[in-house]
Amino acid sequence: MKLQGEHFTPREVIRLMVNLLFLNDRNILTQEGIVTTIYDPACGTGGMLSLAEEYIKELNQNSKPVVFGQEINPESYAICKSDMLIKGQNISNIKFGNTFTTDGLAHETFDYMLSNPPFGVEWKKVLTYVKNEYEKKGFDGRFGAGLPRISDGSFLFPQHMISKMKRDDGGSRIAIVFNGSPLFSGSAGSGESDIRKWIIENDMLEAITALPDQLFYNTGIYTYIWIVTNYKTPERKGKIQLINAIHYYKKMSRSLGNKRNEIGNGEDGKPNQIEEITRIYGEFQHNAKRKLEVDGKEQDVIVSKIFDNEDFGYWRITVERPLRLNFQVSEERIAKLETETAFVNLAESKKRGGVALREIEEGKELQESIKEALRTLGADCLYKNRDEFEKDLTDALKAADVKVSAPLKKAIMNALAERDETADICTDKDGNPEPDTDLRDYENVALKDDINEYMKREVLPHVPDAWVDESKTKIGYEIPFTQHFYEYVPPRPLEEIEQEIKDLEEEIQGMLEEALKL
Image (cartoon, rainbow, N blue to C red; front, side, top):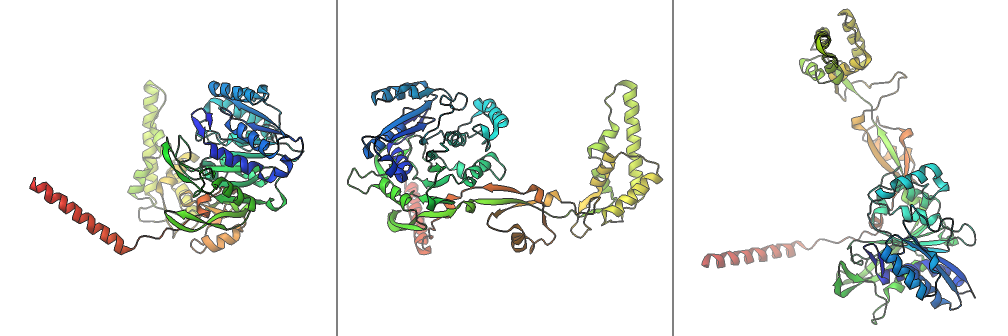
């Protein structure tokens, strides 16, 4: 296993990662005297590097895998260097320090990279350094695609690793373990969504494999292996494969922390589940099915689906509806005016002494003058056109010789207004409808869909006066993995539930009778 702070990676997970990483390159790795470079930016004690080296040596004894890594934990770093020394590797290739602030292998590129970065760990300590690189270097640095939330820095790792891809000589391949968050966290325009967008639109995401839960020693959550590459095979170009491997596990005879399950490797005479998952990946079939045991019953389960890159993209559109207001100078609405900041500030002063008292008194007089001027418009008159009301308001203030500033006039209008679907639409100086921020809504429209057609089909039949503010439209990407592999579980028969309730009632009744006898 690999130690990474407090993060352990089971050996069978590493073996699966290595299988997926190297499967399509077996013909390359078996070439005589082939030299390959392997890198882990959070290498822990070197478990991933060791298994990757072993795999290549199994394929080709004459190959020369060269490993590189970096580790922040001093104990893990020391163990890793010792292990690499025993294996005959160049220990100067193993660097110590924080990968993001002190890249010990700057400007290096590698054939293969794999890692299991910490899940959900904040990166506040390296924020200044990473943000400076992002802002000053952009895509000339490592983090040009975007920055994730401070609470979870896992998405910094694939960007760092992609920056170390070879652009020539066949490119590079990456295998990285994530929890579910990088699949969908962050809406369009957020750092996470922009990172997904950059990876997918550059056709680097090859496959994602969902693993069973309770595989790891310190967490029971579902995890996912991402395969990222800049040289897809022809049939995979523009495509992403999702592999549903959550049922490929066997129960352990004894739990180790949160680890209660393991992926079978065939050593106990049972099916080799690692090889089966690898085979599913290699076959690259859409809607591929396997007969698997689910909740004690054998059934057909879809284990692989193939999607176009664009299937995971969407337009985030802002749907606006027009502002409609009525206006009335009732005592109830005048009372609302007394809560408006611009109106309240008339009777306040930042000065001291007599000057302050005089300003406060003058302000109170102006407040009363405004209210009296408003009352001349009549409490029974309900305006349904803002322009008409504003004209009459201006005339009433002028007749009362009351001068108000633009912010104060706006406060008066706000206090006397109420939303009214039957009122005229409020327009700006160019005659365009003004949006009602309270009615503003957002919709996600698939990239393969047409926004105008979507509006006609899904929105306008319900709200005919709605429109899209195109200036706010953004493109986002998310991968709703569980949605694509949703498995319907039918409810239990009603008779079975009723009988269970009756049995429980009888059991409770019996317990009560026993208690009364005591």
